[in-house]
Amino acid sequence: MHDANYLIRRLAAAGPRDRVFATRPDGPEMSYGALFDGAARMAAALVRAGVAPGDRVAVQVEKSLEGVQLYLGTVMAGGVFLPLNTAYTGAEVAYFTGDAEPRVVVCDPAREGGTRSIAGDARVMTLDAGGGGTLVGAAASEAPAAAVARDADDLAAILYTSGTTGRSKGAMLSHANLASNSETLREVWGFTADDVLIHALPIFHTHGLFVATNVALLAGCSVHFLPRFDADAIIDAMPRATALMGVPTFYTRLLEHPGLTRERAANMRLFVSGSAPLLVETHERWEAATGHRILERYGMTETNMNTSNPLNGERRAGTVGFPLPGVELRVMAEGREVQTGEIGVIEVRGPNVFRGYWRMPEKTAEELRPDGWFITGDQGLVDADGYVTIVGREKDMIITGGFNVYPKEVEAVIDEVGRVRESAVIGVPHPDFGEAVVAVVVRAGEVDEAAIMGALGDLAKFKHPKRIVFAEELPRNTMGKVQKKALRDAHAGLFK
Image 1 (tube, helix red, strand yellow):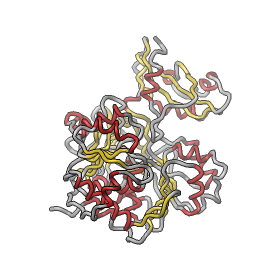
Image 2 (spheres, one colour):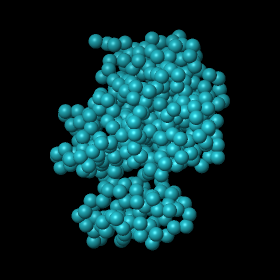
Image 3 (cartoon, helix red, strand yellow):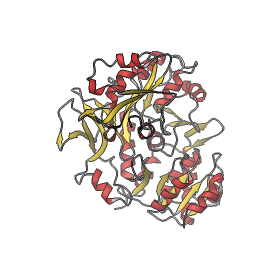
Image 4 (cartoon, helix red, strand yellow):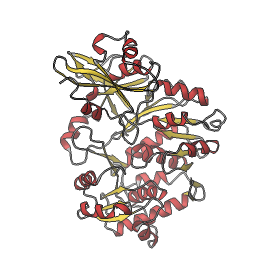
């Protein structure tokens, strides 16, 4: 039975029409009523452009509130929202449009010519950072459309994984996947209509789009909507805000800002971090500077959020907390569930877990078990208190001379060495050992190889790096996650 539009009905329920949904530095406020009216006009424009229920709408645009309306409007029209990283090249976008076969592609006006050449039969429309473009023009002449009925299991979005191994895979997320996860997060993080969330994340990624935006809408709260990370703007907004969702890079950069003080952060109730591991040192420095402990959580494209440190209770640095209500988590090795404290591959099951990979049934079968357990590929453990710790990706594990080395264990020691800013431990081909342990280290002052090697005495010798490489910085993706494949590629010839 159709339940109106499963996701939109929930997202539109909490905020009264006259409540401010968003303030922005360089534009007028937008109310909940204006947000959804604009989204309904975009839905009408998309339907006129040929979007039918189940059709994909691919979007590569700069961040704007109109971009949020486009997401909502796509879902209202019964379509499947397909956000694309603004850093993707034309060749990369050509793969996504060829694979997803969208009915409509929305791009920045500056990309219109190139996008038309790769869009196939799709209709190309534009949306710029200021909220203008042919899509907005088309929507302005439409009457708001009623939301198309869609069920819980109907697709709401396809998000492509980064493709660090092989072709990018399109994770299919249903209305219920998105609604259930955001409703859970609203509850466990205590969001209410009284909150003001600083929104500085991109909206082409699950963190900024489905965590930050959906949770705010479900709580009926307001967001301070920034086009991108801006330390000055975030510091300036803190006295009028209550929450910030960010990636670790946000926090390390904010710690360098002279305006970050306990007084400045006094009105804030919650700082959340995710998308990449947060160093224990960053946790400690943030608490010393602001009096707040960052709440770290763990999620991924295919599942949205899986675990979270507690809102009330010990937020344990170096861990990602406990499984969320309704989410089951187990740690597996060699076909069995491991004992407490043992490392294995994390699997999760729950209403947040995706429907499979778009047009990749074999890949879906490899990673999504028939009984609903998703094999995350993340290696981790659950300690005696129930806290989950991620130690790395399964493909990042190093096997040297027949012994397993978990990079995070070595990185944790190196990162504690004085004048080391951060490190990344990788395995590279070695003629004797199969793989050799290599540490890529970013210095924060004068420190040499001997000092780093001297700190590793408590680790077994096979875990010690055979080479330490110093670098100015570590390669990262747009969400701040260290790209170890790029490091492995760059240093593959070290022992040849």
